[in-house]
Amino acid sequence: MMGTFMSILDSSIVSVTLPKMMSTFGVNRNQIEWVSTGSMLASAVTMPLVGWTIGRLGHKTLYLGSLLVFTLGSAACAFSWSYNSLILARVIQAVGTGGIQPTGMSMVASLFEPHERGKALGIWGTGVMVGPAIGPTLGGYLTDVFSWRSVFSVNLPFGFLTLAAGLILIQSDQGRPRLRLPFDLWGFLFLSMALISSLLALSKGQDMGWRSTYIRTCFALSAIGFTMFVAMESAIAHPLLDLKLFLYRNFTLSMLLAVFRSVGLFGGMFLLPIFLQNLSGYTAIQAGLWVIPGAVTIALMMPLSGQMADRFGPRWLVTFGTLATASSLFMYHSLDPLSNWPALIVPQIIRGTGLAFMMAPLMTAAINAVPAHQVAMASSFLNVTQRLGGSFGIALLNTYVTNAIARHTARLSELMSPQSEAFHRFSLHASDVIAASLKGQILSDATQGLLITSVLRYIKSAPDAEHIQGLLQCLKPLLFRASVLGFDDGFVLGGLIVLAGVPLCVMLRSDRYRPPARGRM
Image 1 (cartoon, one colour):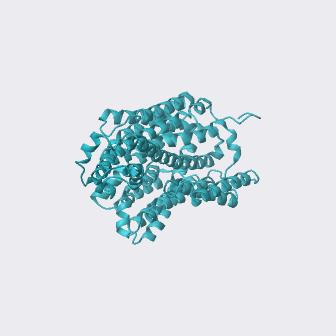
Image 2: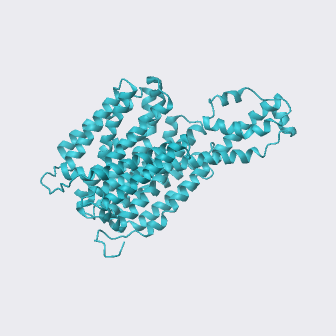
């Protein structure tokens, strides 16, 4: 759990340090984004290798080796002397990250019997769920108090401590039989092609435009890669992913529900902090403190939900968790920058409880559904699916919120009447604050574009310069209100997506692993 927590924390702690890195190395926004994008791609490509590598090296060697690579990569990031060295160090660090999480899940699953795995995976999964929640807060604090390099150097003492504990406490599995299978090179290449293309499209789509040639090419390459990967895996004797795993109902449903869970997890953790910072006026650290109750709730409920999964099975626990997570997102449908603390915290507590009851029972259902010798393969691809689901959820909600803000801006601007007496009186008191807004001190680049576009037709009808000044001044609160409504719509969409997973929850089997009968899914 310690290693998994560190690796997951690292994926969210870096985002708040990017502006400082830009200043240090003198690079632009598009260049600095590769600090996150390069890490995401490297870890995603590494994860599918875990099942095959465990068969060659064993759990202990792979886990501690991945942890060592992650720690040394963190040291290289902290002492990087140039932009290129930082990108290379992040890729090295991500290779370790990609090995830690699926290997940790596989270790826990192999050490515990099926009737104990829920509780064990619940404790281990606490690191998976809490890391993204506290990452931005911790990253903002370390960056403000020390420097952006401390975000990486903080991993060193904890990394070496975890390594020492692992060397002493983790039992070696050298005496256990291993599956030394040949490496599926073509399957790995096609899967890497599909993962890299799809993740690039999802991460760059909003900035470059979903209909741009670059994004369409990425999606085309992704489709080709996935198609060729499936064709290769079904034709060879020792595939990287045994497609027969999808004959086990709980494994297949868990893979699908992982996408819905990722929308609930990353949707809330992505939209709420941005809302608190951009619209409520909180600093990054203050916004992070507001989301701590949700992380604490997850940490407290994960072991309990796992223990209940061992006793009652996954079906109704996951159904309850899905309904609770969806309800918590619906509760933000009227969130306002002046909302009081219960309106912010109560939905987080409900969401934390719901996510805990989705996570631990789902992991247990997926691992218990497959044969013991395929647990490592199942855990690695379950983690890949969660990574893709998280990227998809963030891209979908980000695009939807942007479009919703444009829609509400157009609707609210239609209510303005430049010829009205009230507008004329207001325009006489216009000030230069709108100039600051248009320079980006208040509004983002995308928001400025919406602001200008929405008033072009009104400027032509304004009789004089005073009316134009007043009209622009009027649009600042209008656009602010449109942004609030757009975020509220985003929370509702996230809730609807999570709610759509309820039928899949009801289809889960509550029994343990059993071989699939002929013709039964």
